[in-house]
Image (cartoon, rainbow, N blue to C red; front, side, top):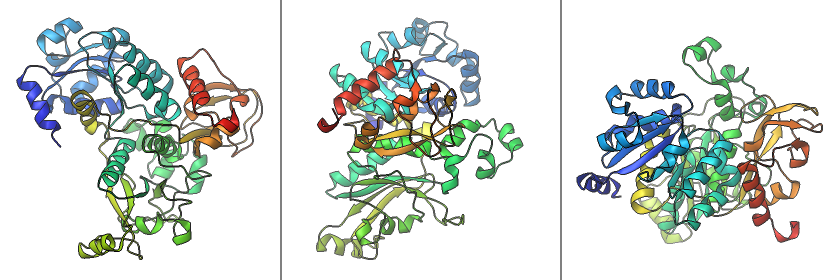
Length: 450
């Protein structure tokens, strides 16, 4: 509640939070748009594979050129400006940096960036939730071992859901369900970058003019991103995954408490304390008015007659029993809100969501019949989509994490709709991301599977 006053205090003391950003693409640019308006903050360095693109993005979001023309980090520190370069290691390792914002969207590189930052004493706000989905618990552990903070990024839906869940629990409410919205019909799971714009309602020409990335947008449409983000939510809050993947029940905002209650009471939940994703489309494709497509929610329980009477008195919208209610945000502002995480990490030493265990996993699943010798193209592509599973089930089948299903070759056929396993692919075991994931699987594997 007092982050702004703490930021202003740091500004008055001449001790700004010193930040390094890795990746100045779409998400990073949204954060950059807010940096000049945030007191007590100095973005010292930006690392990007294309410094010229990063400079273009800075100007596009409103920065004047003199603010990012520092030829070195030392000049940037002396002038209060920003240095842009390709050498992410030099920027991250600089002793002046307090917080690193990982914003590449590349899960394997993100793991390298996080581990390097921890080794050099830096807190990390990890925007690349794909990396968190397959090894977040161990990244959080690595940070804690060094008295550092590893955090999900506020503005992205997992951290916002964590915030709502924390609110409910801190207020004394049992959490029944939590999650996010999505535009969903079952056949979207087989969507490819060639079909995505038709499902979105755009022409290819409109997408081209807008500079939209079909693979990235398809990762949302085909259910991969909702599965990734639901995994992060489960692992950060202790909520559980549905036994056989997300069901995407359709509902308006007002109907969420009716839908997200146990099956025995007329809802869709296999148990209380489960994540789910709400569709903004009816099963026949009709658009639902007052949807939560771009938002997040938590369903909580009035577990006494007195509390249920309070719900009535204050006209809280509940299910017909009066027992289940919902708090929600209909939109999220993505990178525009990342500053909340940076401030929380630096000033409170608190994450805005971080994995506390391996409760769930997102497993690469064949979009079509796949043949030995094919190369997987990862999230949002032509070959696989992500399926949310309980962690115990994923570990039992040896599920291949979606974040590691990119540029790897199949060594046997996989039928359409089947989850891929480690045994289906030839993978580079020297990668930090693969080693960390394998270590996490050993640590988190139930005793009966060891």
